[in-house]
Length: 128
Image 1 (tube, one colour):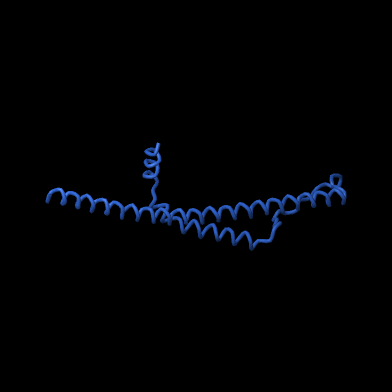
Image 2 (cartoon, rainbow, N blue to C red):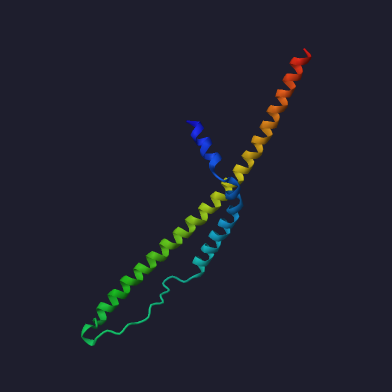
């Protein structure tokens, strides 16, 4: 069962992942900063004209406004949470990339050590 995982890890372009990890992290931080600097409830919809017979009462307008403000606040909170999640994922990705770098270095050192041990064993058996 370990063989498919090894094959999958070899297929992943780790160089590209490592190369783009800082970019993803910076973009996530910019998005989080931009979300925190925007005041909630910004709406840019233009007002439309309705016939006088269809004009709602003041109470209906107030209730609709309260409901709309609640939805806007909920969406703003959801967007902030999603932005924070994205930033956390980007940071985890950066940590994962650094861990992969360390593991690659350790693997290279282990391979060199194993090769040196093999050469040492061959020399020992040849001289004995």
